[in-house]
Length: 135
Image 1 (spheres, rainbow, N blue to C red):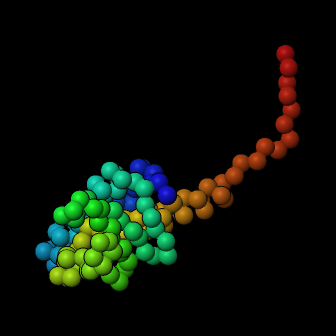
Image 2 (image 1 turned 135 degrees about the horizontal axis):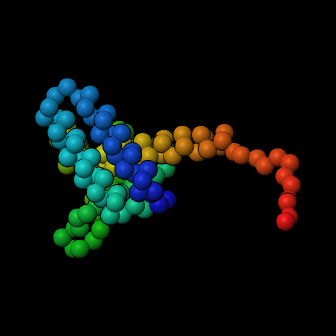
Image 3 (image 1 turned 90 degrees about the vertical axis):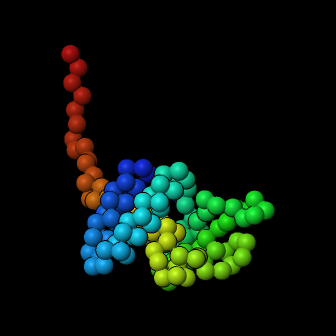
């Protein structure tokens, strides 16, 4: 799936607004940073793999051997799948990670997209009786 940049920006801004409700400033700032990095990564790579509340993310880092790293993230956890199958370090430490922030933005994106599709389905204009006039 390829993300629409206009809907992506809206989803990012709405997700940031949800963070304002965080009471602890330190966590709020870390979440803002994670969301900012996630948004930048989604702009750079708008192709996503999302299914049933889980998302596969290509990391911006590589292994010592130069191999790509892939993270599988959900609301419950964030895990480096390849090459090691271990928990994301930030997640392990109890901090917000950009992988889960990416999931949060994408889920808001899908919600916005669904709402817009439902709204446009109800606004179909039908041409009634039409006549063609010639001069």
